[in-house]
Image (cartoon, rainbow, N blue to C red):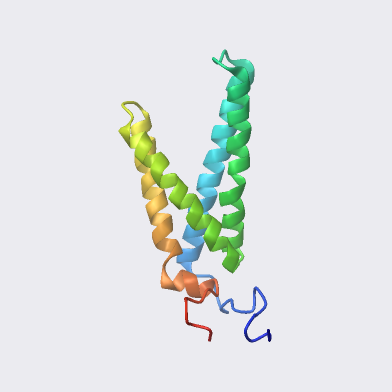
Length: 147
């Protein structure tokens, strides 16, 4: 394959300033990642210091949440650096957040406001990530657009 058919990863990135929509999408992804880190650390600390039903399960959940936070945090960094690969993990994060938001909305507790906030953030981030300006800024070409 020639370099025209298989360009370098950053060769297709548009020049110029980063669009605000891309910056906002990165900030929303980073916000979700930070929320996962805080939630994971909170569960982990409560598992260590509190009296959970199952200490091992609480510690495992805390560690899992912190590790899961890496996906949106790496995606946010990639979006800020205008890397085309970063849109996939960012979109996956938002798609995973929607069923979680739905379950929080079905709860009969203080989780309902969290569900509303998560749904708003996930939908807003998805809209920003599939926007044409964002796609062009990341150098992503659609099917049949091998320009």
